[in-house]
Image (tube, rainbow, N blue to C red; front, side, top):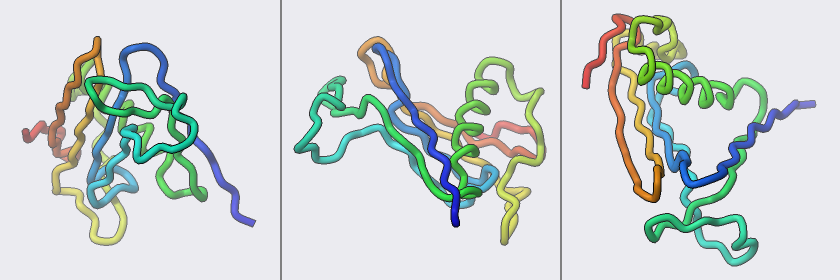
Length: 136
């Protein structure tokens, strides 16, 4: 019997994460995109908030079998927060993708989209985790 874990991301207030892109980090090899942008909604329109003509989900769930990367998504978001707050010095240098076709020398990519005070922002960076160097 497979066990499933669920991570719920709930957004309150005016500031929120809209999207997050990641590659070459822990279990993520290729570029992956987590988005809070709503698709076509016919029911439960109360689950959506509008910001700058964008329909955004108030909450989202990440679910799947054990070992598929749910926690690694959260760890990537935490890593970005820590890099912005504390700089690169505290970075652990083995968090690149270590699966088949290991990318130890390749750069890891992080991009985030935020809504802050009714404005939308997007920023990101590439980092070489092994050498602890910000590339761009």
